[in-house]
Structures are given as C-alpha cells and as structure tokens.
Amino acid sequence: MNIRRIRAKEMTMGFVQEFKQFAVKGNAMDMAVGIIIGAAFNKVVTSIVQDMIMPPIGMMLGRVDFRNLQIVLKAAALDAAGNPVPPVAIRYGAFLNTVIEFLIVAMSVFIMVKFMNKLIRKRESQAKP
Image 1 (cartoon, rainbow, N blue to C red):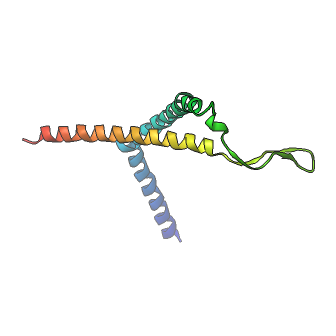
Image 2: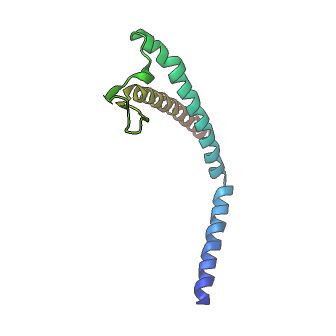
C-alpha cells in the first residue's frame, strides 16, 4: 500500500516538474504572447470588417446593413404568460460578416507566414558558407 502511494507521489511530482519546465521554456511564453496578440488582432479585424468594409458594400447594394439580413422562419410572438419570444431566423448577414472576417485573417496570416519564411530562407542562405 505504501509503495503505491510513493509511486503516485513520484508520478505527480514528475508531472509537476515537467509542467514547470514546459511553462518556463520560451515556446510556451511565445505561444502565450501569440494568443494575446491574436485576440487583439481579431478585434481589429472585426472592426475593419464591420465598420469599414461592410458599410460601403451595403451602401452599394441599396443601403443594406448586413448584420440585419436574415430569413425569418417564425416571427416574434408572445408566449402564454405574455412574455416576448424572439423570432427564429437564419441570420445570413452575420454569417457573411464572419466569412469576410475569416478571409481577412487568413490572408493576413498567409502574408505573415510567407514573410517569415522568406526571412528564414534568407538567414539560412547567409549562414551557409
């Protein structure tokens, strides 16, 4: 019985030690910084799409606000207690906004990766004698 406890404790301590080594490594810190920057970048892209790209497109299409484009399947109503029930709708305008946001993010990431690969190839070619 005591041997099992000792082994379990050793395994736990090994796991904790391994996690500490992982968390302190540069890769984990780089990943954390990347996630934080990515979240901020997402807000910027969302604003670009919703506030700068979609309004002119909506204006060209007859003053349409894409966020309000939807197909109503069931209109808003009142339930038995008199409380309002929201409409059931397919909100394809919000979906279009999301697709455009994705395309902008994907293009931005592609450009960044392409640029980084170019820098890496340049550094590797300079390192070779």
